[in-house]
Image (spheres, rainbow, N blue to C red):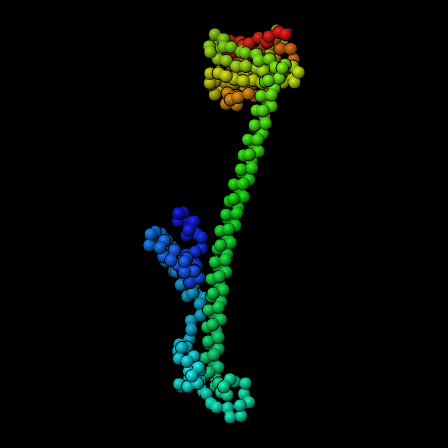
Length: 281
């Protein structure tokens, strides 16, 4: 069981304030015996309630119990003056009148009762506010998770759609896979350009290339009419799979060179790693 979730559930406050059901009381006491942190939280809540009562509570007046019993039994004990009303025209119950001291006592009792009612209302409002705050936080957390989940789903959906489109393009009848094999410098390096004249689409698949220095970057070239045409630089991390590159009409070959970061206007021929000719027909 998650003890922190149990502590913040509000059941301990209900237990301390005497508002818990018998089943909840047994559960709280069993949890307190097993987990010292539960007992510590109960003591902390009790201290908080005692401090609050000390600041805002209204204590019952001294001798309240005796005065109440005196009123019920109709026996004066030196407190309020009680005398028979022979004409019985007073509005007091049982034909008695209360003197000034009796009226003060009743006012004190009323004040005490109102104070208890106010304290109970304050406790109820506090518990309701506390539970509402927890519920609001839980809703916000769930909403944040839902929004992130929706973003992740949308990103994965877009990625899946792109892969599906690329797969369809590769299987198209006009797509030509141009294999670029390693030069003497590149060794076993290997990459493929999928070129489709009908769809005007070109895709680069980097199978293997050495990791470049931090100030270097690979650049793709198309050879058209015997001259190199820039097709852009790319990162190996971004090339984990197919990536779309600019379409070039009537290429004779494709090649990859290692250039300064950001690329070059012309290829560095002694840094050519892979090259491959486009098949005719």
